[in-house]
Length: 307
Image (cartoon, helix red, strand yellow):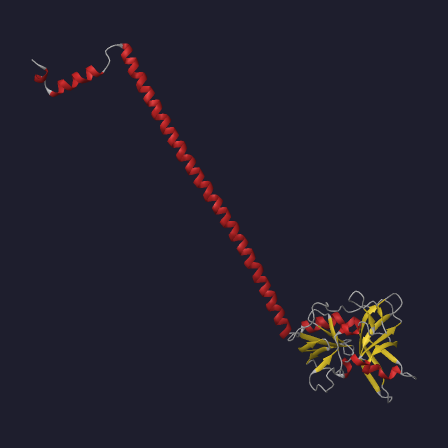
């Protein structure tokens, strides 16, 4: 019977027998080749696994880098927005303070200025009473100096000069001496033999008052030792401050302060750089006009009398 006469299954078995080695050495060689093939396949699979693992690790690390950067950027943005919001709130509060200064705000400003402000009583040229206010601008270990209105103490510029008295509630009267004066700016400087009295701070030279700012006039006369009135700045120039704060006689010569309690000008009822009666609007000489006329201010703040 020929090969073709065998059934199909028998022919397949014969082909497998011929393909397999018939000796032990042949079997060993086959197993060796199979092991080499398995090892190569394992190495390829391991290399593929390592490559995929490295790609995955790189992707994870890149994700966390981007994530952390996003978090940092978001945090910085939130912080910046927070600071801007705080600045906006402070600005709004400043504006509210300008337009709604009352109650505790006024009391706080008066309490802050009051120790440095005195009521001035003297006589005018006809022998009648002349009153106003004065405030301490600097002091040393022997005496203190106060700015006031020239109009209040004008009679003391000639002899015989009337007595000038400074008064503060709960304290003894103090005799004052007219040291020097500047009629053009309605300013005068008084000295008293009281050492180291507290002086009011002046506003910075590079931060002048602006149109619309709230300002406050302080008098040394009041039931609590002083009084305060408020108004707005209408205009500012090198000649002085134009404002609508009502300046009664007792306020002239007293300080005009800003919302921080710093002196910006000196209250006056007669100062008129444009030479006309301002009616309901008052002019006030800027406090720094006192420098080099009745004061010396080499460092920007008064250190000694001028004149």
